Structure formats: C-alpha cells, structure tokens
Amino acid sequence: MGAYLSQPVKEKESSDGGNVKVKFGTSAMQGWRTSMEDSHCAVPDLDENTSFFAVFDGHGGKEVALYAGRYLPQILKDTNAYKEENDLKQALVESFMKIDEVMKDKTNAQELAELSGRRRFREEEEDADEKMSAGGSRNVNEAIRRALKERLLAEGTPSEEVDLIIPSLTNDDDEEEEEEVNKKNGERKEGGEIGKDSSKNTAANEQPVASTSSAGGGKKKFVPLSEEELSEWEGPVAGAAAVSVALRNGEIICANAGDSRAVLCRDGKAIDMSRDHKPTDEDECERIVKAGGFVADGRVNGSLALSRAIGDFEYKRNNVPDDLPPELYCVTANPEVKTFKYEQDQDEFIIIACDGVWDVMTSQECVDFVRERLCYSSTKDGVVPPEHLSKITEELCDACCATDTRGSGLGCDNISAVIVQFLDSKKYKETTEKYKNNTSSVEGKGTNQALDDDAKEATAAAAVGNTNK
Image: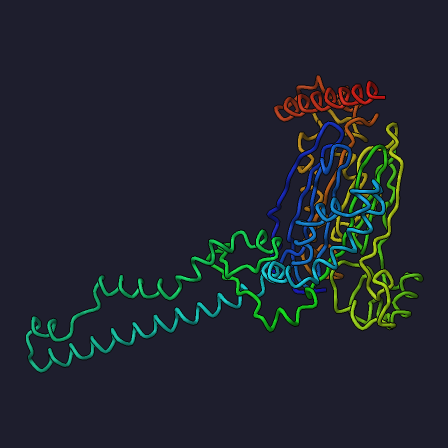
C-alpha cells in the first residue's frame, strides 16, 4: 500500500481555463502519501480544432508522470499521423509509444534524473555534512582560544596582553570564512542559474550542468549523471498510468494505458471511455505470459498492479523473443483507444482522474457528485453552479481522501482530477438560462455573468460554424 504521512497534505494545485467550446477545471492533491507522483495537462487549444486533456498517475517515482505532463502534448503534435495524415486516433497511439522511446534516449536522461528528485536530496545531504564539518572546526578553534585565554589569565597575564597574544575570531574572520565557502561553492551557484533552464538544454541535446532548487526550504542541488551512469542509461525506474481525451470536430477520442480512467456523462449516465488495465484481465494476462512474464497475486511478476503504462522499463526488457514489438511487451505503453461521437443533446461533461478517485467512487457516483454541483440534477434555492470548475475538482479530492489510514488503504492515494464541460450542450444552455437571473448570493452574481458570457460565446461559435458550412 505504500508509506503514509501522519496527516494528509490537503493543499491543492488547481487551474481553470477553456475556450468557446469547452471549459475545464483541474486539481491535484498529495493526500496521505509521502510524495506526490501524479501529473496532468490541459490544452484546450492544441490546434484550432483540437483540445487535449490527460492525467498521469506515477508509481515508483514522479519523473515519468512529470515528463509526460510536460511533453506528451507536443509529442502528439509531432507525430506523422497528426501532421501528415490528420489521423488523431493513430496519432495518440504513436505519441504514447514515442514517449517511451524519448525517455530511453540518453540525451533526456539528465532531465529525467533531475525530475526524480532523488539525486538532489543526496547532494543536499553531502552539503549538510560539509557545513557540519566546517562548523565543527570553527567551534573547536574557538574552544582552544578560550582555554588558552583562561590559562594565561589564571597565570596573571594582563587581559590586554592576552587579547594581543590570542585574538578572538572577529567579524572580519567570519566574512573571510564565508567568502572562502562561497569560492568553493562558486561553480555550483553559477551552474544553478544555468540549470534553471535545464529542460531547454536537454531538448537541444545539451547536457545540463548542476542546478539548484529552493523547493521545500533550503537549497537542493542536482548532481548530473556521470558519464558512466549515462552510458548505462536504459530509461527511468518509475512508470505512470496515462489516460487522455482529445476532442476534435464532434469526436471524443480516449487513449488509455493503465488503471486511470476517463468517464463521459451522457444524459446523467456514466459511460466509461476507458478500461482499467489489470494483469488479471484475460487478454492482458495472455500477453504477459507470452512475453515471458507471469501474474501472481494480481500483479505482473508479482510486483506491478497494472499491465500497461508508460515507463516501467524494468518490465520492457528481456521479453521473449528478443525482437518482440513494444505493443506486445509484458507491460506495454500501447494505449487502448476508443472513439465516441459527441451528442450535443445528451453529452454534458467528461471526468478524467487517477485511481485515487476511482478506488473510492464508482463512475456513476462521481458523475452524480459533479452533476449535483453543476446544478444539473438539483434546483435548490440559493444554489448556483460555481464560476470555476476547479471548485468541484477540489471538493472531489477532499471527498476521496480518507479520514485515516486504517483499513484497506482506500482514499490514501494521490488524487488528480480534470473536469471538461461542454459549453454548447443542451444541458449547459438550460442551466445557464435557469440561473442567469438568480442574484441570491454574491458568488451567484459572478457565476451568472460568467455563465451568460460563456453561453454567448458558445452561441457565437456555433453561428460561425454554421456560416462556414
């Protein structure tokens, strides 16, 4: 189940955005886990006709999830299927497979190592040892001075002479000592300024130098991989479940590898757009065994609890036969892709979330939770839809967080969720009309104005679309 904190971290990273067709809200919360390993991305305007949203649930480390959140949208745009063939479904497949190749590339090893955070902490500990050593020497020298002074004074030596014989450690000495320390650390400090753009350096096939970060208090220094480590690089240790949803020209395309999930709310009913990939699934188990692996205790080789993921290169080596294509690996990044036609009269919104949500709520329970807060399923007096969807995603995170860590461990995971709402849907327009004149609260006034503006923008966009036809 993993290690837990004594109290959950409930601070959330949230965002909101959208365009004339959709609006979105996102939230991510660490919860009871000792670290945050989730990531997500929301790109409403990947191009003029395409929106892209995804959630990455990391395991064994955070670097793969963070890397995917940072680069998968651009990798998607760079695929041949996207650029040349205008085939979004195939482009999604290619992008999931491509990001594995990119992470194995030695030119990207430094960035992934830095994202992991593990090497930074190691260097910080070394610095702490150095400081302790320097401080210890200083304390010893001062103790010797005091002892000698006391000896001379006890022998009757005048204090003025004692000060001349054994001067105290002065402020000038402090400054000289600090200057000496700065000289020793000069290269690291200078490197830190360069290292802030280490991702850009890596993208340009340049190796980043040492960098610093102030996250979590004192400075944490990144130690670049050595030449020997680079030569042995075969990809990051961590992995991540990845689920994405792309919207284009009336199509909703979901690509999924792992046990995160995307759910479509259609006329109040939850429709799973993805399947949780578990090693015990008949087709997944068959692939695992054919590749030379096994399933024990519901896990791949008795260890990994999902059968598809990006990263996890430990399970993508030594497959049988040696020339086995990546889509048939024991654990594969090959996504399962499903396409749905957008139904304006029925479709309301999409929820994309990690298993920190789905382990606690069923798809329908989650849909009901969101619909109630969008006022799609209730007409309580004085209650209006929130202006920002992140208010709902934040409430969802809290609802899925356990009160303690006793029992099964459900509700003790990292939690990430994205809600995408269709602004031209029948339900949205009905709700907008119903609440736009409601001034029962201060929040309601701001919300109603936002709803009215969104509705006008959506209507204008529809009008432009009809004119173009």
